[in-house]
Image 1 (spheres, rainbow, N blue to C red):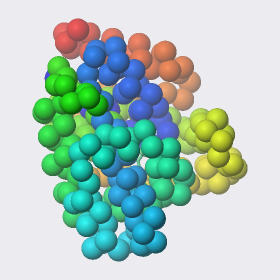
Image 2: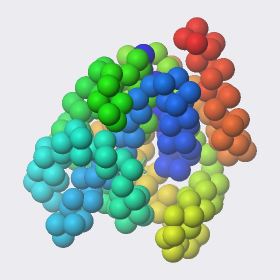
Image 3: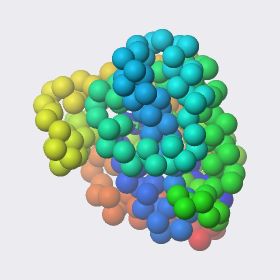
Length: 220
Ligand code: DC
């Protein structure tokens, strides 16, 4: 059982994905963390995110255990690393290198301690369209960019980062553009995805809408 959650940056994918995974006792993979991890490696090595060879090397060298533990590493959550990630995300060789890992996780999900899980929740930009088009449950989250900027700002401040609303909003707009306009695996809802606009919804509302959809499909 695979649940694919795609959508715009800061639309609430991660929160929903983690909550569904906890509720259903499924394993969770934040695929943005893969791109961010490659971004962090380049940043630490003072390499340019447009350096295809360096990015490819960093992507191929990623180990499964490293990826799962890096998901919770605060160093990959900065705006700077997010920008690095969005710059390497359009590179076909990078997407290809990370695709196999994501599909393996989706079809043989495991919890962090290595035990097999009965299902997987993956969130990202192309899970329902490219990584797991066979997923039975596909959700696509969107929200107005001003709402997303406010949420991202709050989140950054809570984690102790200094951030300015206008800069966060402009980063979100740039990120939306590069995620949706790129030629390969652009961000767009799969035809069979439930599209949820979370602008006026609480996290509980979004979770309830997702559960209703899953129940409606007869999976729980
Ligand atoms: O969701 P996020 O902000 O952690 O993602 C960071 C970047 O990675 C984002 O700009 C888009 C890219 N990404 C992608 O291209 N495909 C995915 N499946 C996940 C993330």
